[in-house]
Image 1: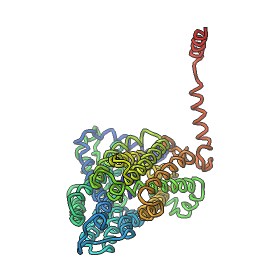
Image 2: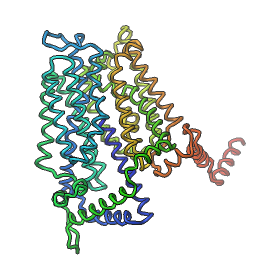
Image 3: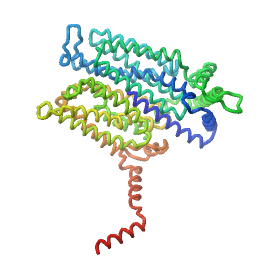
Image 4: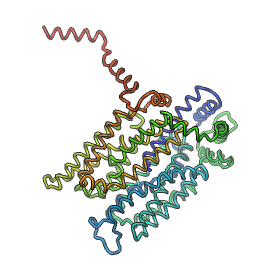
Length: 558
């Protein structure tokens, strides 16, 4: 559901696939021949903006539906305050909702995500990547129309469910399409269009919510849903690999000619770059079909894989990690951001504070690409969890003191909540999604990701749905902030004790870890070897330096 998480997943699927291909290349065979061919074609591709123009345009248009996704995710935050008599002067025409009803309005968009993910996958393979994006506009338009015309709470919930279905159909196909048309070294940058659009959509949603009524925002989203359809129809071509898989050779050739129209053509070759790519895609597809016919459907084999340590261990570990992610308040503070800011007695208007959150998510989604490639997973999560806990603990105290009148520093909760959002973005928000691509063996990665994705969304639904219940359990907004702090600390402890490091590890190394280790990472051989290496590095002091140090000590004693 979260577009940043989905994009992180796809980025690391790409990295994992690249590592697998390198292993296949070393082993030789037909696949190695194809890999060599791909790399030989890459040298012909231009690296300037003109030659990359069609790929950039295709990625920008395909990912543009993420803008509506961002608005959909943030919409409950601007809608819910208008349904509560504590925040608005309700008239007889306004819809009034109870806390239970508002929790359903907020969480309805998430509950349909697993269904949307499965149906979206079938649609992608059946009708194509771009056609699935076009189809996403249907539930989106119906959903936003239902919300705009709503006269009661059930209509709002139905509208949210439909926009949730559209969200699932409008995200994954875009990422897959970009992966299939983009040059290898530009893939990561082009995939980042998705989370950037989504963060921009959130920011725009909060900004429009400040100036416009929630019904007008819903009407505008109908136009936003149609724009990607029009642009796709007029300006871009379907994915060549998908067209080849369906035997539509002429259309695949047309698409490849469009993608490579500004590319320099190979010297001393009778074929164009597009023709060479088409031949390569056909060979690759034929090889895949042969492999598939040898292996069969493999459903029983996949089920057996989950009974192995490499199947059930990472699934259980990810369940725990996603539990801490969801109940640390990351998505609750998004779906209820305006309500949350108001209840903490923040000095800043809830809508403006939410606009700042959108800006922060936008900036951090850009920074994340670098951080996730450069830093280890475990330290990022632990730093993220500890800082989140500190922010929520202090914010809880300041909320309490402001209520009691013992302090007038009502700007502090705003600052603490914004720092909290920043720290969620460096660790506990993106990394669990990332690790679904890193932990599972290639044989079950697709199925395992679907299961982990569904678990994460069900936990997200539970956390968003239980916001008001948690407030009742823990004594209001102060107690729930301290609850988030406790969960954030537990996430860091869980990571330190149990979660293995996957950054910079080969797929075979991760598989061996799960086969040969227990559930506690700190007791594993991998953890012990790291400590030993660290101690060795510390103890490796040159004898000359030791001798000089002893002489200095003797002089000091004299």
